[in-house]
Image (cartoon, rainbow, N blue to C red; front, side, top):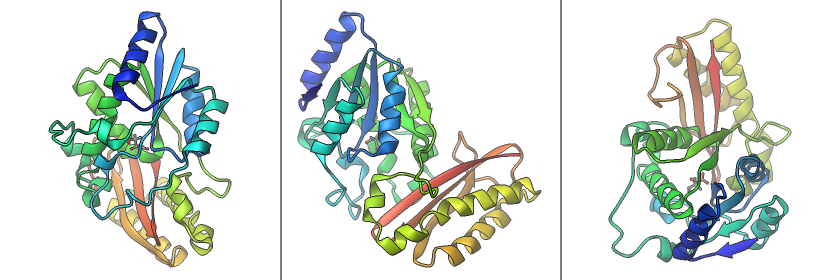
Length: 282
Ligand code: PAF
């Protein structure tokens, strides 16, 4: 397995692979790999000849008061996991080699980033779209795999690829969970024992919301209030950032559920901000 830190060297290696007729797959990550990431890697492994993962905590997607500095990092463990899952190349650049001091070009799809995480993280999706575009250009990948835990991110990236005619196929991978239902996230490492014990109630609340919708409640305001009440009781130390029901493609809030909808939540628990979502099909 190769490890490359220099963007130009990565591009040269990937262009060589393309010239040799290999297909390239990409799994972008911010490292601190867990089972959620390795399942994306396993999925991508079946779709390409040469598999590249990036391990890069992208400063452009963190706001000023966010956890850029404390974001968990463990490159040795990432390296071992990547190797065990058949990765051909890890791209692990330094921020300075990805963003020049006078970097001036951004990619964004502002309308899809207005709600959910975009409300409290206004520059986040611009940073994600820009770094992912750079990774696509550097790797020349034909396929990339992303997790559906970050549903809004995946919807925005799908739109970006379509709108800009990027020659790449995106695959969304279902949320990977702990046995008790908590969605896997590198940020789960921030949870105290007490917070970790109640965190699965985030998912339990979403499942109850789906039952309520299937039972006939289609009014989104009522459903959101129902979930807020559930969380107030079941997540005493949680502070709800948002509870929203949106169109799954446009990420725009819905008043009533007519066909399919996405219920998405973000809850702050101590140092962690946890997100989760569920599709509602009625
Ligand atoms: O989902 C993530 O981990 C990041 O947003 C991504 C896609 C690797 C871009 O930095």
